Length: 251
Ligand SMILES: NC(=O)c1ccc[n+]([C@@H]2O[C@H](COP(=O)([O-])OP(=O)(O)OC[C@H]3O[C@@H](n4cnc5c(N)ncnc54)[C@H](O)[C@@H]3O)[C@@H](O)[C@H]2O)c1
Image (tube, protein in one colour):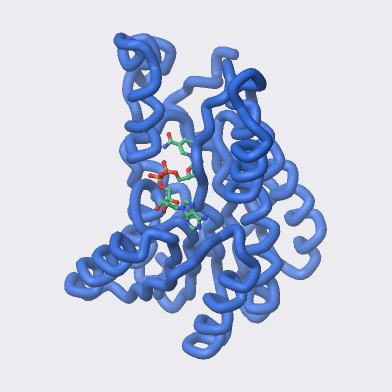
């Protein structure tokens, strides 16, 4: 579905990002992925390359504009364009106002929100060279509704949702599509950490709130990313796509 496409994924070394890198490459794309976790990224790159997939790992700190510039320069030199950008890198901060500090607030906004500004700004000249450019921003159900605590996280993910709509509006006339995805509870190292901080029995309680009664596998989200990166979603732009097993449907 993605043969010939050049795709950039941030935060691709593990979790959902790693699943996206694999599925996008399995569908025929050449996937450049970046992460601060160099060892994990190199290892994943070696594994996927040994399976015959076309992937390239780059060191990338999404909070640093120069780091974004370096990855885009490398992609420009090898492929001259970007067909899809997946702004996936993120961190979780469960703290509410009482426990959040100015430092944790700024860090969360930097990694989850400013990264989308920096990354998309750096990619835009290369996206403009694509026949069918697509930007996929990873928000969360917490970009649509609040939670107990999560003050910086909800702020950052809500911003990603509205930034996506502004990008869709601004660049739509040039043919650039931009959508946000809103995962619910997805089995990744991030969710493991979150569950580790919740009281015993929380997994069962959350499962009962989800109509499909389970958490998702990361690759179930990747299928939506593949669709949004592909030309099969050619008229989908400015959308908020919720992937939560029905969790928000009853709210
Ligand atoms: N897991 C969930 O249930 C869930 C739900 C909703 C949204 N999300 C969002 O999905 C995205 C992926 O989450 P995940 O669950 O796979 O998390 P994860 O922690 O398993 O993976 C996140 C990846 O981002 C990378 N990263 C963190 N800071 C970075 C930085 N400064 N520069 C570059 N890379 C950086 C990490 O090294 C890691 O590889 C995040 O944006 C997250 O907020 C996750």
